[in-house]
Image 1: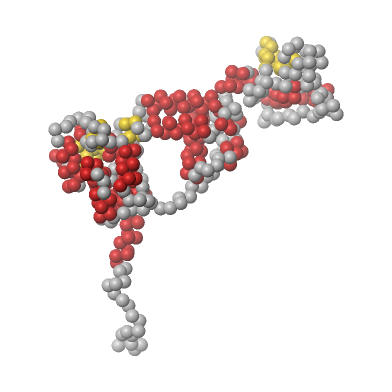
Image 2: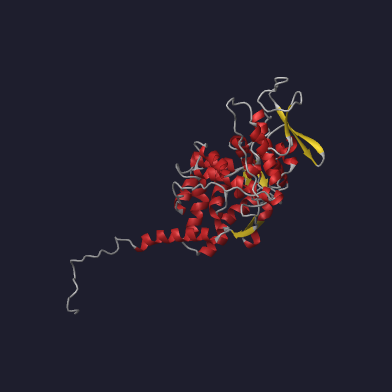
Length: 408
């Protein structure tokens, strides 16, 4: 049986609940004045003039007093009547649990408290290297800046309409960012479902529209762009271009990752924000071959250095490079209007795709899904089609050498 929500009717005075309503709807419990304990049927206590109420209920032979509704709000008379009616509906449906109506349980079930408990668990995982610290920071930002309308809601009562209203009120955010906010909530509710068997609410749908495709530049254009950098920073940029690593990965390469005897390097760590983590985006370790240029650069910088030393040291700081520094260098010296990722990893993989099949691209780029690699190969074939269709090589003229209708 499903619990029914009762809405009290009022008499002509507007403040007092009719006796018929009480008799029909309230079988268990009573409404008392919080100050003097008198039974209440009106907004203000006729004995002491106090307005706040409490509900007294007999549970297993003991009286229990309830001072708040499930949102944690102190009970005025109309709220108390509504709350007692809802309690009676739960009793009739055999779903009543008094713990759900007591203040500690009410507070515990609020979105704000449940979310913070989840964040605490994610912090533990991040500190132990099992979860991205950067993602944890984003989850904190989402909570502080965007989830406030959900703070006081019972997590068990959050429905599609609440989440849709949350999304509708977000202004100035991209579809991608909005989707990330929802994905975070999905992950949170899956955790609640796993630990507390809480039913997942239906999520709003957000369609992410990619405004413009990423642009790749040729090998020659990459080289020319890097030559615009200060000489002392060119080696890491050329190594970055040759290996097709992600920016956090190239900064995290250490001397111990090199196998110069076999001309290869192990990619096994990256930066998450400013934190060095011993895993990559795909959470795996993989060897990749070094090109002749990448090999010569690696050998030069690894000379007389060992172990956990970073392969590339920033001359400006005497420490390893940080991803933010390389992004700033690109902003100052790179191709205007082109992102660092596009000019390095994306352009390098696009270059590989003109000479390799999808499986080879997948191995070199360390893609987790072959479909990503297939897109690069498909795009490369589109570029190659321009070569085979060069109109300056052959010009077909229909008015010359017409075909003999007899076939001779």
